Image (cartoon, rainbow over all chains, first blue to last red; front, top):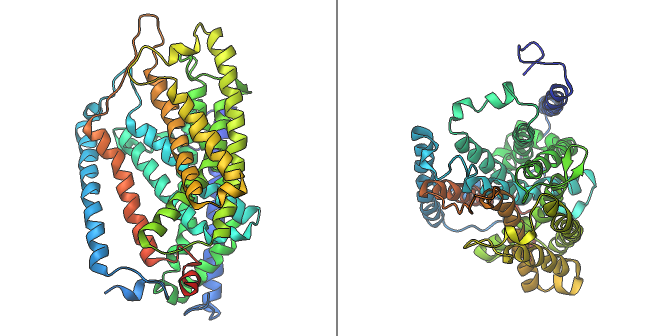
Length: 53
Length: 412
């Protein structure tokens, strides 16, 4: 639910529940975006492939 | 046939043997899927739930798999946030188990809501006064975290790793894993706790209700603590089972001993808190509500005082004593006994807090409601177990789940 939804209320329950949910989603999304962005950069720089572990 | 996919230096059984095993377990999966289809197509009248008894067998299974899957968040926290490096040798297994447990829990919830097409309602039309809403939010998000933690392991498959993009992605995800692990621990604390909180706030059911801190009943903290304490026991048990089936040593003893010791101290602190909580409930909470303790353990064919003894002594004190004592912990038979008792203990705790809560009579004219699940409920409860066996088998065969496997096989 977002604040523009008709069910939304500016109370502690909505702020805590949905604040926590969107905050977590943003952290996970930013984390994955960073990983994918860095991977694209690394791959374009010719890193990786084969048995490098 | 599939040797190009098997990790380098690892020995696996011939493909036809593996495929036969998967097919046998697959039959159980199909049985469960059929029962699940019945629940979705015909409705929850396929179960033996009713207006009085609203929690099916699968809700116990749901809480049990979430508890024993707690090894993933706790081991991840220890490995990535507290930096206990030895645990890198068992973290992959913990993540696979966590992924299986949490995907199973979500599957069970999808069956339990009866109309899965409306599953998204809980996110959009949320009741923000419900602990179960918090559970749904945290469970779904934590499953996303587990998926993120599982991806690098999949990308380390021998063939996938040859692709530079996937190799780099796996490497970079490992680099950012502390952020994901910390997020996962935060989410786990809340959904494990809220599952306990659901029982603790049942003011109409004196068997479950507890006092607490602010809005959180003591069961909130006990559930989180017990998941962190007993989850590693299940990780160790699965490791031991895989070693037994494959007849190979897969994890070094120092790693097993370390995780067992941590689990032992966690169980010790948990069981002390649980005993205090139980005594306070026996001596203060229940009498204040007009009940004596034995009201909850007599006048029925199943729930006797034995269940309290089994949960606290056999499933708590005994495994804790074995796991924190070096001499006993280093005895492989006693270690196995302790981790089995631990896993059974936490499952029994969830049984009591879900099914016995529903069974205890509340009104003076009530009688015990001894619920017998329908075959559809049994099949859908067995389904996640069979699915877990298949996924773990596939992961073991094709992914480097046990990083020490090659070294241990050459030592032999």
